[in-house]
Amino acid sequence: MLYLIPGRSPRSLIRHAERQMAQPPLDPPVADVAPDAETLTPYDQDHLVTYVRLLDAEAEGADWTEVARLVLHIDPTTEPARARRAWESHLARARWMTEHGYRHLLRGDVPN
Image (cartoon, rainbow, N blue to C red; front, side):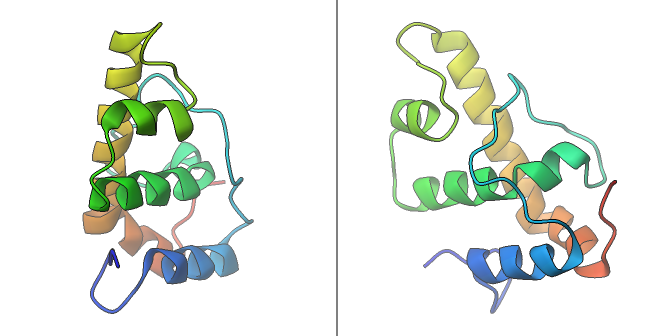
């Protein structure tokens, strides 16, 4: 099982975040590039489930093209550069959430 922070599963982080803010959409559309702000953004709030799905896929060793197609809804066959850029940036943001962003959620520092 993948843990975002010691002793907290991705699902427990989502449950905690839901108590702090409105429930994030389960499958929102994604931008070509994820944010790279040093604080939690409204986009992050809306894409918590997407980030967890990306981290789970990485932990399972899923091929990036499959993840781009199933999680990000970008076809890597027809748009390989866009799919790769979106996958890389969203996975990087998901990792940022495990290292830094979760602190904003735990403190209740959620954007409006």
